[in-house]
Image (cartoon, rainbow, N blue to C red; front, side):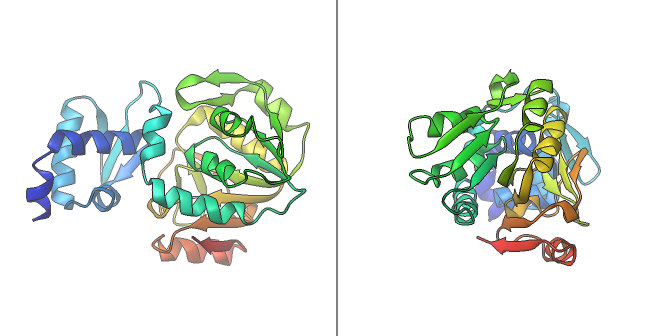
Amino acid sequence: MRDTVCAVLPKQRQDQIVRALRADGAGGVKVLAGKLGVSEATIRRDLEQLHAEGRLTRVYGGALAVDGGDEPFAEVNAVNAEEKDRIARRAAELVSDGESVLLDIGTTAVRVAQHLHGRSVTVVTSNLAVLEELENDEQIELIVLGGFVRRSYRSLVGYLTEESLRQIHVDWLFLGTSGVRPDGRVMDSTMIEVPVKRAMIKAADRVVLLADGTKFPGHGVARVCEPSELSVVVTEPDADEATRTQLIEAGVQVVLA
């Protein structure tokens, strides 16, 4: 029944696969099947076709996004929107009035910003969408880091961004990720963002990882940090239990949204 339904709109389903890979950098057959609600056999057929069309790179167990630019921010924002909002709401509850918050790039960070409206907090960010979200909120002291503008992903990167981060210190960092390895290591597939993420970690007292259940375990080509560098992970109840256990054993508080 599942494959009968999904076969009606194969093009739309394949577009969803490409969007998911661009957002995460990579994806396994099982994870993609779960996201789209179809069988693994259907996903394998789609991956083979998309590989033949040059829209992704087929690898053992899944696929990789191809080079050629970032996914438009609005499209990424629409993926797992309800899950991201629950995680963002729970993350914002960790912050007390008077504290300072550093928001990473990405769509979940923007949702954290939405839940900080009207709060007496300081927000520092390299996320241009966060700037747009908070610029008219006079309760929030807003600091934007400098850097090179990545228009498609609405972020600031590069030496100027990293140097700005060396000049500040904040109470909280809310960090995004492409995926968490089974041993708890935080990974990312957007290589140009990784040095900025590492500089953010050094600038914060407490590091909170924001990751929906599909990121456990997840993919990524570059290591961002070890689990011991995290304070809190906010995720979903269906996040891989073994990975969550590894994080807890590393001293990380795992909060389920």
